Image (cartoon, rainbow, N blue to C red; front, side, top):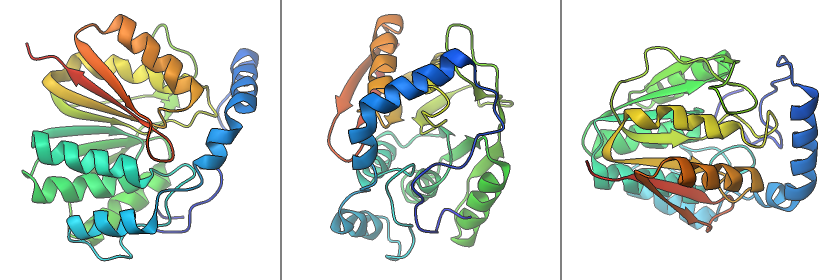
Length: 245
């Protein structure tokens, strides 16, 4: 499949991963708690909001797929665009490619010309996303990063990253999926030391219980950053600001 096709109910399969009994229990427990949010996430935003976003970026109406489910909703995409327009970042790093990569690449193209490196655990999906962006005369470096051992102190599995830019202005966290572990995206904090003073973090799906627990821990452990939750949209966005040096 490509990122332009109709959104499926579930994310791409990660069944090749070996989940521990404890991880499986956590997924089942949080699934029972957050099912209303998962159903809500099927709505990717109003068609008007999507049309407004594409018009703002100078893109045709059919540029993006149906949003929702495991894809970014319109509200999160607007956060990406507005942050890039404000910061004019030289370097964006993204975890989990797709519609967010496409929108970020276009925003960088028209607001400052920075670059984006995006990592995804699915090699074919990363390749399709790379091709989709190139077909639209935009640039992004989309890389396959299989999931494996997470950083010390975090559960689940995490991207096995290589050649990560040493200075990051904007970190976009849109993966891996919660079905690996409700706290799986907490490992993104391993990249926080690379974020420049004044840089940002955007965490998708931030209204879910697992991401709220991640946010609580980030607030306790990273006192040089300030985190706020935008609960609007279908999924919620956590916005992290790194204090100036």
